[in-house]
Length: 317
Image 1 (cartoon, helix red, strand yellow):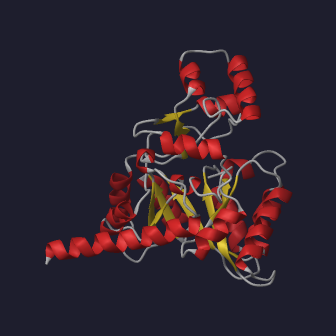
Image 2 (tube, one colour):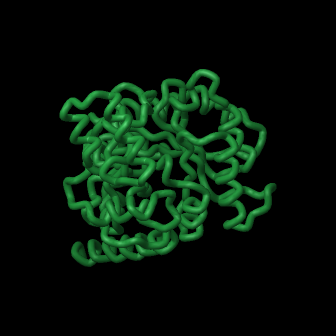
Image 3 (cartoon, one colour):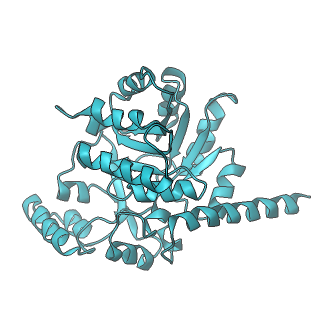
């Protein structure tokens, strides 16, 4: 959720009983530090205490020439966050090694995968502490060739040892019923993104939140249109993004020149025009109908999940 999940959202999710993450995407080192300060202030923890949030990093951003990768990772490590999430990089193993060699208290390493093969590498070679299985339904970036979440989850669970790391499911999850279905399928938990874009604590604009509320099922599409328009083109091969279809996508598919695509997108950024700018959204966006504080979302998810699991038990009795 780069560009959407800052310190405010991460803190409120953790206060609700989840584990909130700050997503590092394209901001500066100082901006990342500022988001961490925001989270620590809201959670009322001093600088020497563990910080009950996580920070997520895009591997390819860490791997750019002259990127301050070690300083960026050290922001998480110096603040003793509970977890560091790594995804989309060719050198993830080197960042895992750096994290594990840090002298302070150990931080859980979360690795996002889109295939069984990636999961086996993360579990057997990198000894990841947590695996996130991301299905093709997920909003934002992911593998365009990933299986649907329940298929991917089942495949991974069939090859990872029972005493292996927790496997979480991500992709198109927006309510407690879907969380319950993942737990019933064997997952240890669920990861939600799009649902929290509708919280006032996300970095999304009011117009983007309204676009999500108005979006019907089927309106999110996988595309490289937004990355071409924004010139964010360092993603590994096979990775694209799922967002709401708008004129940027239509004109990209229609063969508009790259110069015109980027010019129109830049104009849309200036005015906040959601018919031009990206609004990342998962496949279940049509189930979202209201803006709700992040802490309340977590609490509601928990209640709904419990209710549905209890209903399943009653059916089987």
